[in-house]
Image (cartoon, rainbow, N blue to C red):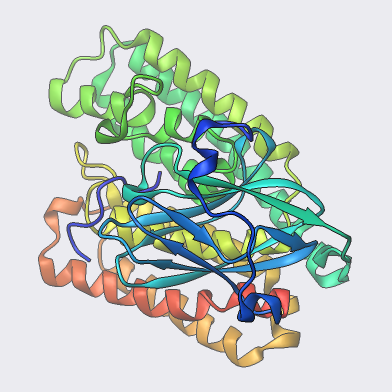
Length: 378
């Protein structure tokens, strides 16, 4: 689940939503007209796009945060289905997002403070373009990663059911042992889970991100009751809802046809999740089991890159070498904190040890951030 309070260290709505008018109307700048990135200027009260009418194909957005709050940028299809996102854009910095968009109606959204519906504007995409998946290697990548998602989502359903059963039985010790195991399968495919609107915050939302519409539920609500209160005798309904939400998101994930760019963007998003939620210890703040999630995010990123590897080797073998070296360094750093089948708790690590993990992740994130550009050729 994305961070809602950025950084100790470092959606809702529809296509006819009321926040729609807050962005700029259609206009064109030189770079965009010439085929360069579409400039997005995000502030705490505005979300200005250089263009709002696009040609079908891969769109490249360059989002610059000119506000005082950390922001996010999303492209939504109908029903708030996430086509692409880039999170944790700090004030003064720019991030790029590549999204493959067929003809249709979409919304772009900046989320200053990374909360709420965001400041939205309509995007119209017209014409036609050959999908990236027409490339045989990229089509195979999507098929291979889809099999990975199916295997992980099946295990997620099974392990969540075991966790829920322990909670409902009032077996606190067993539920505590099963909590990080069940979450492992969610964290490996988290970018896929985030495609489907409210299900992700219902399953993985944190207390400080709760709203009247989306109250504090899911894994972290049960985590708090297990570790802080030590009493889950009244959590039967919450456990049942978690079980139902996990089954729903697993069914959606297994039916989803992922594009090559979604794999590339997801590989980077998982490393962002590590940097912004796990290194800081904010994700599992009650149990301190953040390293389980850390390892799962890295494994998920590695799986996405592995699926794309044949295409990447043909297009940029030097980048593949750099990525391999980065994963090896992360694995070596993380291995220092292995304990049996699990990991040390976050609050057992020193600041220097956390910095070592952070440095390894940041070094890997740099070459991973280039994968989408190599895959799309833009």
